[in-house]
Length: 290
Image (cartoon, rainbow, N blue to C red):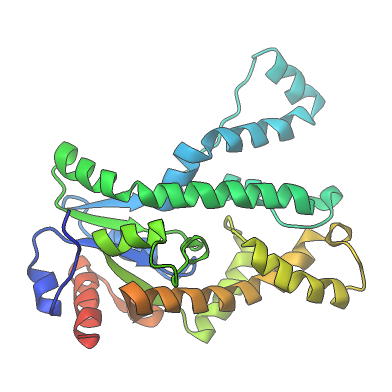
């Protein structure tokens, strides 16, 4: 499988077998842009969908069943095999996964202890890396089974957290570099504020690196005058951590784009209306970095 390297933007446009990976914060337009590309010509690989339907699907179902078991009627029906409980994860529906990922805070208010939260984050990190390592196989499958010559990777908002851009041997980074044109969709400060507002009303599953938690938790505890995060409402924890997470991720995504990819503005992505416009945006990014 030859790396996706182009000397000009036009060379990209002329290639009959394009492979593109869209990266960036959740909500910057990755999925919206992918939908503009013709489904008859492009195979879309959602890393989120792969994580939750293949690698963490059983754990998600077990979590939902554990919630149901706390209800006397539902618990009795489950034990008697009278009902089944399964997630309904889809490209547009990640609500169940958001509940599974959770947030640090008081368990009585729906939060997670530090130990439980850390275990779920570690499970997600392993699953996300593996889902990205599956990309070459899915490129081959898409072409061999379905006849798709064009392939799009819709990466998660946390892709930058499980990639180490300074590590030349990072496996996920090498897979992306070797198989795709990597496009980082950069959010403006105004758009980041919109993402913060949107996250409050429509939460998505959010992965937090342990070193990020270790660096930011002391400030939160000091502000709230407490020694344990389990004493806090998880909404308070999320409101403190999420804006800082966006800045943290923007720095990491910038490093990845500088290393192996190209950067486009979220504002430009919002403005595209056709699949051809998406491709021309990619071509312009390649041309600009020549």
